Length: 160
Image (cartoon, rainbow, N blue to C red; front, side):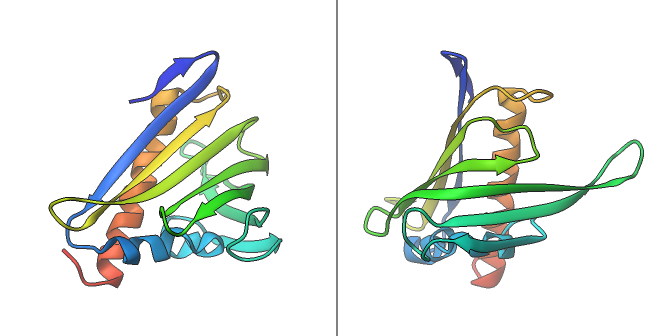
């Protein structure tokens, strides 16, 4: 559950993939510029830097339709890969530009093995408070994004 500390929000979401090997899940997470294949994004592509290396910058965008006025709005973000460790199966990135209200946002994604088999994916974040959001709302968004990634991994790799 999210918490407020020193004005920064912190949160974490976790999904378990009981029948998915950690290496399979990591292959999805480490493919930093193709995350749109696994979650609800219209596009994601490399803008600068080298694939798989810190400093890589990706651009991600989606068109969101307003619930009330039914008008489409393009929401976009540029994210910079800060660290990536294929041995520990984790990466960190920061939001460097966006039109979504992020002033400071750093996320860390980890793929961890489960003792009983399979793996779990953790997505933790630290950010400045965002106007129109709560830490619980942002954490819920991260959780739902992870659930979509989980579902798509299971569909792609035929695991229940």
